[in-house]
Amino acid sequence: MSTPRLELIGITRRYSDVVANSDVSLTVAAGEIHGLIGENGAGKSTLMKIAYGAVRPDEGEIRWNGAPVAVSSPAAARRLGIGMVFQHFALFETLTVAQNVALVMPQRQQRSAVAERIRTIGNRYGLAIDPHRHVHALSVGERQQVEIIRALLQSPQLLIMDEPTSVLTPRAIDSLFATLRQLAGEGVSILYISHKLQEVRALCERATVMRAGKVTGVCDPRAESVAGLSRMMIGIEPIPTRAAAHAPGATALRVSRLSLPPLEPTGKALHDISLVVRRGEMIGIAGISGNGQNELMAAISGEDRRAPRDAVSLFDRPLGNSAVSARRAAGLAFIPEERLGHGAMPSLGLDLNLLLTRSDPAVVRFGLIRKGALSKEAAAIIRHLNVKAAGPSAAAASLSGGNLQKYIVGREMAKNPAVLVVAQPTWGVDVGAAAQIRQALVNLRDSGSAVLVVSEELDELFEMCDALHVIAGGRLSERIPIGEATVELIGEKMS
Figure 1 (cartoon, rainbow, N blue to C red):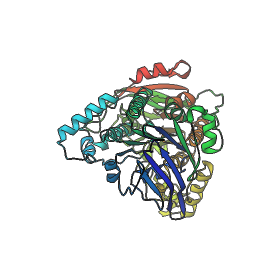
Figure 2 (spheres, rainbow, N blue to C red):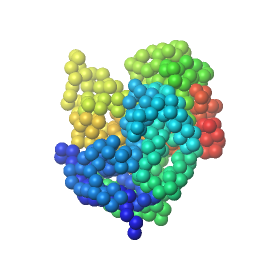
Figure 3 (cartoon, rainbow, N blue to C red):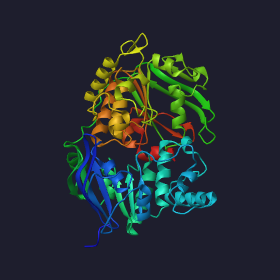
Figure 4 (cartoon, one colour):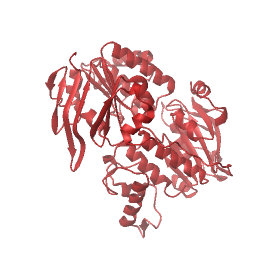
């Protein structure tokens, strides 16, 4: 047999009393596309950070092309030929795309040359990004494209990809897969981490399965069903989403002819957008990332108050230029696509994070925080959605991405909002957690709430929604009943 490209042998990593990886071993051959799957909190991301030099193992050995190595830093990993696309982006928000890419280039290059290389690789692989845009003005999907381009520009021998397609369209995913197969054919090894089991089955030749920080098996995913892979990952098959028969009620959320210039010079303008969401109804918005989703969500949530007063209404009450607090008082809840720093404060405990959206006498009285009440509510959310956390006071940053997403969803749904607006509800979430979140959203809809979902997961929208819109270029399509929607029709409108 040929020498493996990467070997992780007996890797153990502890964080205080939590064991993230316990005696984990993994082998990737040259030119192999190897999957790494497991539920949220299984230890996958920690293991990949060890391989990339971002985290040091407490025990174990790393071998590169057969020789023991000490991967002391990401720079050392890149010198070896290891590139990584992170699920949680490693980008400087105040710098441009080109400046972020230049930081990891092995030799100093002119900014114009870096920008031209970004355009070339982006056009080649369907990841076109303006190299002169600042990262803080990019959507989550666009930031992920920057990570992929940056890794490909390093000509890696091993490319680690952590949830690389979580906010890409089906067409972009097909293009990425073609790129990965081409790279593998040229001898590049791909280590592919994903919760999308259909992708792993379609792309990977072997897959290592992790649960609770340990390896539970290695398989050929092409020979396994999605249900079989789910059982290996989480012990059970995901439960299909079930919805009750219902008739929509009165209009809860109305957006009327909303037009706004972009907040940022490189942002997206909104053009004459209108939509209606009624009680007991879930409406989905599909679209390629960066086409105005963020701007629309900001206008609805109240983070952008530039809209005319009658452009956004809740239960026929005009609130287009009202503050977030007024919209929450009218029954609106909002779950943003970005978890840390927007949906939650990283350094605060889960209990104190409740204060981001709560100030009623149950948790704050006479200006004093009722810590016991907050802890009780946080514990209830943790139990209800099976959030893996050290406890109610655990810092938000200590949770895996999927578990933090479950907690934020639970926090916003705890008070049964009359209107819930949610962006990317299952981004980077494993199959079991995604099924829980989708069912929770459907249950909220069935209880009479109005739900508006922005997602780039078409399967998710088709599974949950009563009707769809497509956003492209800051314009919203007509309402499409779910019975008339097809992947081809939605994909055409997205393009």
